[in-house]
Amino acid sequence: MDTASPRPFVIRRARREDSAALVRIVDIASEGLSTHICKLIAPPGVDAKDVAEAIASADEGSLSWRNGWIVEMDGAVAGGMISFRLGPLPVEPDGLLPKLVPLWALERRAQGLHYVYAIATFREFRGNGLARALMREAERQAEDAPGICLIVADRNVAARQLYTSLGYVDEASMPIVTNGWQSDSENWILMRKPLV
Image (cartoon, rainbow, N blue to C red; front, top):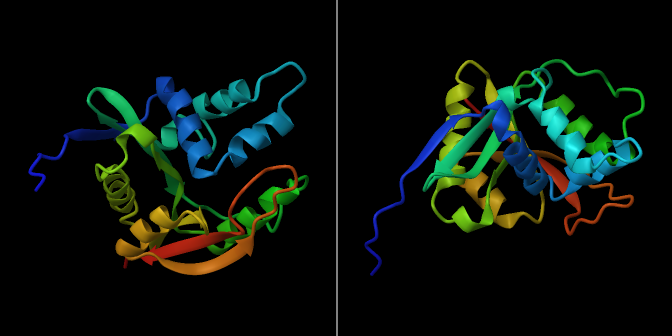
């Protein structure tokens, strides 16, 4: 019988210098879609990683470090999340890439909710309850919202099982549009949990 004590960890607000970790978190959570998008929008001669880090290190915007949370274990960044209250969204912004249309449609269904945009634990730290602790932190942040939600790929079974165990239910799904990006999943799933 394993009687080892759980390893201690700390959850803290992200800082600008955590931008590279936040980029990695978003890339894991999006199954590589974020890197693919950054490659598409990067100016000639600019690396996709630099584009992503510029977005994460900005003071404004949904994907800013200001919306990030970091979990540390053994003095190292072990994962984190980006979460925020999802405000009103237009029907569909001009120039939206086709592979983002399904995500946008699901986000529109979640307007007014607290949105866990991305959450991930780095592989070497998995199995320590960090994702569960991060989700609890997101729920604490969302106390004044009518609910909390996230979007997950259908074949991310471990994540879906975690969210279900925390009371999240499938609300809607949309087919994934790959169009040059590789994914083993077929659908994006909007999962929601009421908080009031």
